[in-house]
Length: 462
Image 1 (cartoon, rainbow, N blue to C red):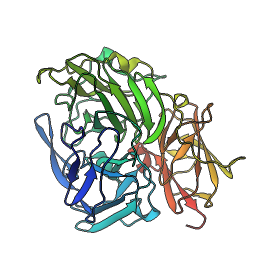
Image 2: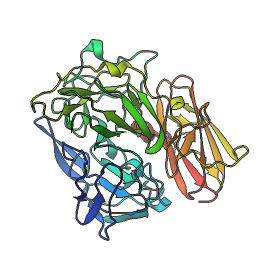
Image 3: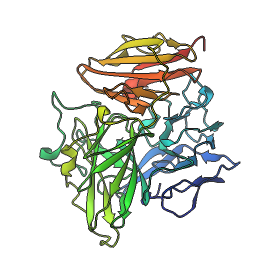
Image 4: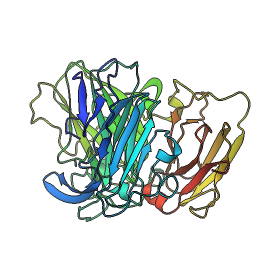
């Protein structure tokens, strides 16, 4: 992905060989579906971290190439495995046919080194999504990228668009302490661990990257005075929840996990792993460069990008460690987010309810693969009640479905990943069993998942 990841009214952008995808122009999404498949080629590569070359795995770049199409188009991606081990691709937030979901030994056999696999399915739902490897801890390297499905008729009006992928990073970086001082914030500004502090994981990551860039070499977002920017903010980290804010600029939330909500203005986003938010940022009649801060929850560390007004000196940038006050401001809560398109639930009560405790890396007292499937029948209205008794927040992700979070409004956000608070936090959500197969339901802390924090949602005898 280029450092300037904006999309304006430039027409079409070619990605890979032969796949035409739409540019995100204001007021509507053009685009086309090409007959040729986009080649996606995972393999060993090097990544430049502010002048330091490190070895990792990726899809040619970190993040991988952006895939962009319109609702109703067919996604065609040919995976050519250049890794020394098997791999798959999961289309995070989409609801493909089960065989296209990319879960090793559940929906497909991993593609062996030198092998090829064609992912092909229609994408009827617009939104901000991601793709990433789903074998072992491959995601924890550079095997991820953005996937944007534009609506046929874009209701939002904006001038420029940027995709920002937030990641915790350790590959090739010497670890000298928990999120050490490589571009880190001062101790008095950090989101320090404590009994009441949000914490998603406990491992050490020396760097926080934004679009593959460390804080010493931040990506730059440019806009003219008076512009409206659309930011698609995605947390693809393995072990870290983030706060995200833009100094001097409020954020108007328009989508969560790609699904539209009634616009609500906040200071800061809080994103668990796997969660995404779309926000609008109004650029005032001003100039200069403004810090976009990314703060890990419950640990030291720091990531950033820079918002620069057109015409400001190219060298202008806030200090590396400048802490936007908005990071300590009002976040977007589930109760604030009203779904524009709630799930079409029938009258009455759910057909099936699963009441599940999250404790350590167990779901409902069981750890995968020694865990009973959560069996549903096609057409059922299913409710999951998640009760977190542990000390870590758990971002829980359901494959193949969108669900609606229950809130007092009755119009809670429609999502695919939801963070369940630690120490007694409860989140309840509903989904419609309309996509048959065997689907993963798991914590999107990649280490928790590898330790067995997984259950299968299984249709009948699937």
